[in-house]
Image (cartoon, rainbow, N blue to C red; front, side, top):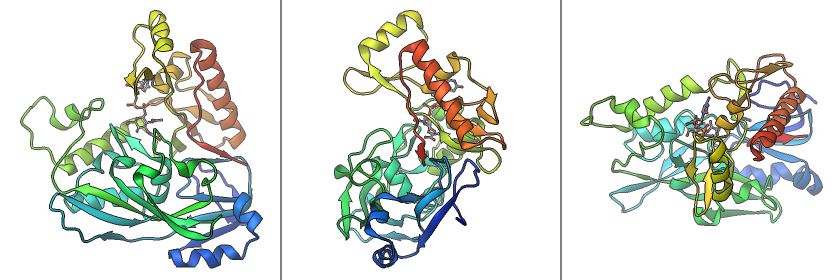
Length: 338
Ligand code: EPU
């Protein structure tokens, strides 16, 4: 084992094979050197590893796209622009490109770690926007059927941090090579999440909002709340925000009248996992080098000397205490890989 696997927790984990590809045409031949069984069952597709927790060295193939390139497609629309982006493009480089080129829609997703392919698999989201809102198509190589396929966004099964690419039969068997986005040429801003609007406008109602002002505000809010993986290993939100039935929420509200919440579809309520974890007293606590980040308890950090097991133990203890106190089972957003 000699190939270091990219991961933002900062763990020194290695893979038996690390396969990098630069053009989609290379994929069929590159993969054909491995037995079909290994391609289908011992292969993990990674971006920058910003959502992965490798528990040990990986006895299989780690596949990583280096497909770059941002291409404006020809359309007749005056109000929108279609842009095809290589799956290996760094997500935030693409967002910066949209802002520089006068295209709107991606700016709320500034400064999210990762690459374009993983963003489409994970349906990344922040500040009231999800990437599915402006995906048109996802294109890639289907390992099982040995063919290239293109999925329109409506066929991708998108939901909160959810897509068909995260579940069988396509999970790790569909290699995203490019994503086509439809962005707006006319300004449309989504500023109603949290304090985004006040961050940009201050107390003034008559500010001329620009995409770059939104981008700067999002970057500044993220930097205040979220640790930089280059200095403190982490994988962003470790848990998803749980969605519970309205009746369960109302029962909880009797004991915790201040419980924060968002509507999440008919009869469903989303509760911030950060709040549940903080109520259980976890904020800022550390065990064996694994810690709950003090500014955002949804994030588990590696203080430098944690092992993957220490992260898993801490996550398990948090899940158990939230379940015991609130009767809600929170689940990791981060993938555990053995
Ligand atoms: N909260 C607390 N204590 C805290 C922090 C937050 O109680 O210390 C509560 C507050 O009620 C706050 C609420 O949690 O209003 C929501 O907090 P925040 O706005 O920070 O968002 P989040 O729900 O915790 C989600 C995403 C983030 C994304 C932010 C902003 C998930 C799992 N996480 O976090 O995504 O940046 O919204 O849109 O949905 C990521 O996925 O890695 C990620 C960072």
